[in-house]
Length: 355
Image (cartoon, rainbow, N blue to C red; front, side, top):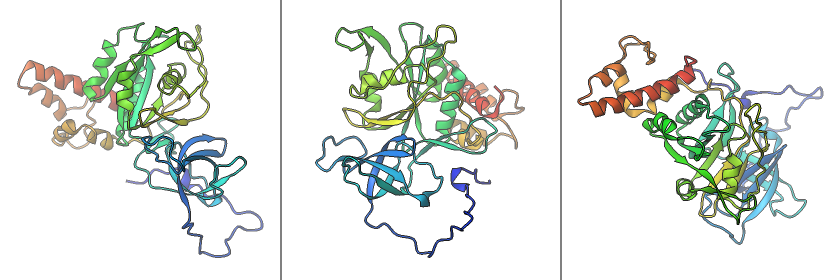
């Protein structure tokens, strides 16, 4: 299988005077220090240096925030929130100082997206995250299940666990959405707004304990379209975040892009949350169907008996997955298998374009 090209494959043309290096021996940067990228804004990177990037140590004596730029030798390689990088130069973090990022350390996981399902170029959203939190509102605006399916599909292709956060729980019944995603093994938490005289805006998010328990000690990235309440939830979890929030348009049902850049914030109990701008499109050209099936171990084992070229969709002839459901020993097992197969096919259809 051919490798999917990304931004690192781009090669700029040399200048008129030439750009040939004087020597092939490049600097090793043996004295480089490690930094954790917490923010990206117009070519400048905010990093945490000297502390721990798992969020468990707060107030380390040598912990400092450093502003850095990307070294020229990195080319067009994208640096994103969650990256662990090597820094040289002025790493004191003093006002007016600027360090240089010379290397990107190996990433444990990468969450990517493409502009659409035909775009061959991948765009990295977040690195080294171990949980994807898909935030959606139960009402105002209405939930978009195809968008959630695409996020789930992208995470399964990268080995990242998924948590669906349902906001505005007091305005609609969350049971239908729970029935769609719990058969996939996806955890679902429901939050609602409640009056609180001590809150700055008079409202608080409840219950937060279940959300904190799912996020503590992990690096979680929040995704969702504009206006669903990502930044509102982040502000409740991290009181000092002060992320900008907006309102949903009554006519279009869409929110404004109040978050313009991704930022990593440390949770009080340990761990990190990465708030991202609202994404209007989430292409899946980079996700391979075989990788998606391997994320469902029970279905993958059954699909080994499928005929060659089986698409595993509803209209696939002689698909072993249908026989697996039909051969269930009892009604309860049949219902559980049917729900899981239906959920898998819905996510698969969002990747193949059959939805």
